Image (cartoon, rainbow, N blue to C red; front, side, top):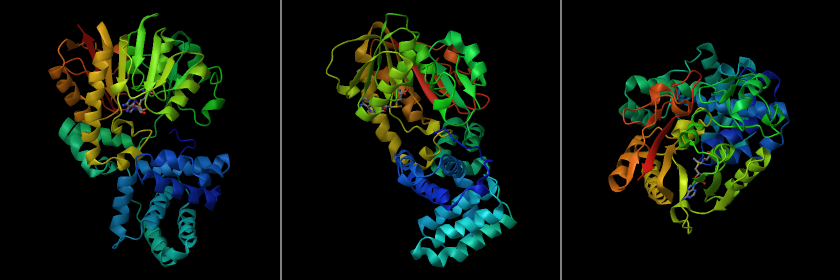
Length: 433
Ligand SMILES: C[S@@+](CC[C@H](N)C(=O)[O-])C[C@H]1O[C@@H](n2cnc3c(N)ncnc32)[C@H](O)[C@@H]1O
């Protein structure tokens, strides 16, 4: 989700309904994996005007980006945990006072008002008032990297990448990302960069600090670009498809990589098992004037016998690498998710190998920081799949930062590998004999 308001919005001018909507959204975001998406379609948010809606979203994003340190600050002040709703109100109060620069009196008063709106919570008005006033007197440290990630994930990152890298990964959680765009016509990068106040990154992604409704930005309606993180744009480039080659995007929705393959001139088949998500692929194709065959199917059991010159498997994963835009993933993920998803990924990789023509290329990627979904997956796949070998990715290929290239020619992109950040990903390219 792109934040629509900067953390410095004039939040003291925003009323209680925006804060109530933020409370609904935070409750949804912390309520499960699809929570944030469901929360964004909540009627309370839809009923707000543009400025209030932007405030509510920015407040929730700031809260989620600093949730660990916010909770540590609250735990130091609250002896016995109050009901979840009161905890959420306190979290939002802290975020307003210290991250959105809401005047302290307004952050405290509106938080007490939110509690007062619920008849069952009247007895917590005093607690909310006292805790927030106490924090205003002694402002907490909200950007300590050692507190920014859930402790179980942070422990995993320390084990996988070492203490210093894990700290640098975690420090990125607090940073609001820029918006990255992929272009239909890479040759138009310079003029589009000027129009969109963007810089051109290695690989051709445009990065802009513009905010607000994307649909009003230059050349959106014309379909000249689509939103796609700089890391997410690399896998399709690694396939280097030539005009007229066939390409299969096995888990395609919402379609960023399908658009790249189609824009490069390939004849693309886009599979996904989710019809609602595929609708977004079709909408994106229509807006950009690109074409692809769009099919709803389980890619592991697709009853079609075709093979393709290029196959892209952007597999379903824990998505822990996407926390810069989706900080809710960190708090919704559970330790058991990783093993379950790894089993799905290995079935899909086997199917991807079957779909790749002899002499063809296969790219596997996941927007996850967890080794079981990346390095472990690839080692096991190579071990059980004769005739498939790693096709090492060259230094800087596709715009990947040099720091991400591993000795075996796979990529482990960490969020701090580029100035301003990029999503965490693992990518490997294979060749079929
Ligand atoms: C990481 S997202 C893909 C993002 C997409 N490649 C893009 O660049 O816009 C993973 C996708 O896998 C789809 N998916 C999950 N299991 C699948 C399966 N067995 N077959 C096909 N698609 C699947 C999900 O619906 C989801 O859209």
